[in-house]
Image 1 (tube, rainbow, N blue to C red):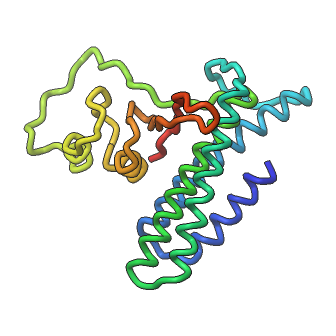
Image 2: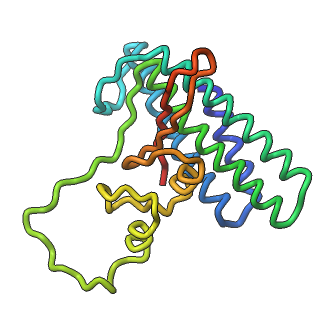
Length: 211
């Protein structure tokens, strides 16, 4: 909880430096991820203490110590990339600095998502996820193709879009970053395939993209 509060304070300080743009969008996404994590941790703390809590219905998840350890390793790698981007931003200016700052904030968003995965694996805290909704019984009248929204058109034109989820905007930066990193994209999740340092066995890390 203390670490999450520290990160939320850091976001407020950083957001005050900008009037808008990509970095503020990434900060907002990271704030929402951390606020969700904080709420669920607070619920768990109240439940442990026997206090009344707001009920959140989520699927049960069994703790997985091995997965938690793998995610911690992934968090360490992400933190190293954040520090590298910060050093690049500090030593440059103009466009190079702006790109480095954007990359650093993208990695911080990834770190926040990994933190949620760690809480799930370590303590069995399940996070709500978006699932496709069934089609309504009365289908709306079809619209001409040229009336589709820009976000829907863009989501269908990017090469990495998951065609099973046409409602998801795959032009969002976390999906684009996952594609650049060579990760698999499934629904709202990005899946990184790596090899364990100890025995070179295959391992996969899951992160939930945040809009």
